[in-house]
Image (cartoon, rainbow, N blue to C red):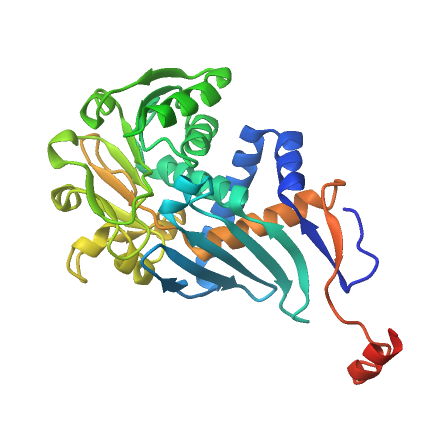
Length: 347
């Protein structure tokens, strides 16, 4: 690990450096290793100080802070979700995050998280599918072919061996983009003209749409016995993708119920509708998929522990590379009590 000689200098991973780090490691190895970090942290779920994200909603979107900590590290992510941004050539989601040392309160990593969030979301989806999807599943429908879609496909390929994709988006150019990006990785890809066509014969369905509204992207009649549904688009109040009847037929798995009941597909259900926490399945305290015909639903809204895992992973990997900058962002007076004197001496 490359040492940071001055503890007041904070390593910063820019977008350019994040891309170079991913390509150095390889997309699939990166997702596999990141998934292992996420799984490791879910196994010690009870050790984390957890809270639902702090959200500021507006007519145009949402801005959120997502904190999590254990007894050694503290992490937070700033993230937005503004679906209309794409019409102006901007990203729907942008993010950055910080990792800090609990014992001193000093930041130890600042990183872009727009790309990293896409990777951790996909890695979490695939980790969940290891426990919930049909055994040896190789086919997946991707409903919504925007910025998240390729990451989902790559994670499911890396962790589960999924190699057949059926793509659908209301914008055919998004499907064309997604297919072009993924073909070099050995997928068998079918572009579909409707959701109904996309889900034909698949074992896994991933819904990843962006519009901030209650919507029925997937209707009940399209969900057959034995399917695993990976619902990642419904991630704020008033935004859903699945018909309510699908929820009533499914065994539902979530990250953090206090957050998911507000933001997830299960906001359509009563507050006491039974759900299973994913960490308990990973830890062997609760069953995942029990029968061949069972419909499983991972109602994923994204949770701060996953960002904690992602920042911890990047910290461990990036300091072994040249892919970071050193930011002078912490005041360091000779006498910790003389901050004003330090300012005067800068003249």
